Image (cartoon, rainbow, N blue to C red; front, side, top):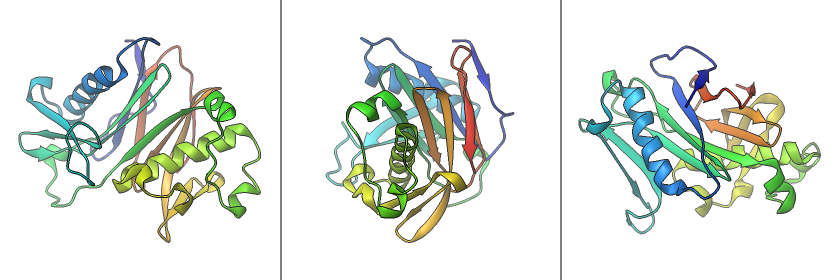
Length: 216
């Protein structure tokens, strides 16, 4: 797939790759393949050396839950998101060379404005509702909310109303603490959000999907 990148790849950055998939495609299968490819690229290794899976923090099952990846026994923080026709994967670069014992966590989500318009996903509080006046704002806020909760590790098992989103300042508050978020418009109907604790974010998408970014 022909692609482009917003910025040069940097150690310690979060690399997000966006894949366009057919409407009848097995998005779960595509997601697994995309995850392996993204981790291999982020770690600078061959895909065959990458191990991936899922782990549910609630029941311990491996057929659902938060995605995980590792290379040569070293964990690579990752996140995965899907919507109609799109799979997005986020992976932290440079972990193979990191000496940190605790690695950052990342969360990514992608939403279609048309989906939010058809079935409003509204978990905003009174202050948010005052300025989330367009469906585009609501779609972006929901994508940020899911990204933050994925970064937390529990996803939508946590009440999304606990996340307060400030799109204008590129941040979100969860459990009393503000964190930077990155919002990227892939096209007029498609918005992507990344929560990575302020780490730099690069986005690679097909050439025929123009995008613009905002946030921290």
